Length: 299
Image (cartoon, rainbow, N blue to C red; front, side):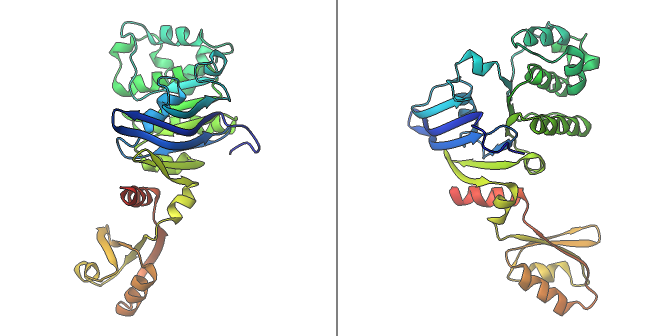
């Protein structure tokens, strides 16, 4: 949970950045605060990588300001409080995992103990292996260990769970929650919207270089009128699918799953036409549906 009254750990203020004639970011305001996980979402090319790059000092804004802990992203003091796990990482293939961890820990004033860090990231069994010999999922776990080994106050995670199996993903989620509970600020970019829904305290949606929606997961979902109805019915699927207020319908086991913008109308019709209707549930649109609708509107 966000720490009340705290200054931002990372901030973009009216930031503009263009590549040639293409505006990657166009007046973006964004901040991440201690004890908060902010999920930065957007379609490919929306400007997410540019935003992260500016905060890390990998590029300079054309206008506005990027800052870490109120300082320049190039400040050594600020950088020592940051952990980073980017989507792609160039690591020396010939070094052993333990050697990579020892090297990275040396950059920080108060790093985690090697054993604690390895156990937290689930890489204790990989320390003696060469990085280049690891699978893609194992390499991602090592990259996560390197990102958290310096006890960061701010953590950048760019598509961190790509290539991970379910167990490793759940373990990483648990570690993220623990870090946030301890006051760490996390900026997460992900295409797994269920990941953002499960973890985010706040969501910001980028589209065409602008923030087009921002708020809690509940607030983002509430922007969309769409509902999902689940039920067991004797009415033929094709009949329900032809109703004017039904966007789509599919069968999930013995249940129908109906998507609609007018749940009340569809439920009334179901109850009127099927006296044996059972197991009726109505759910608000998930983050995935809200994201699609918001980004389509922006386009």
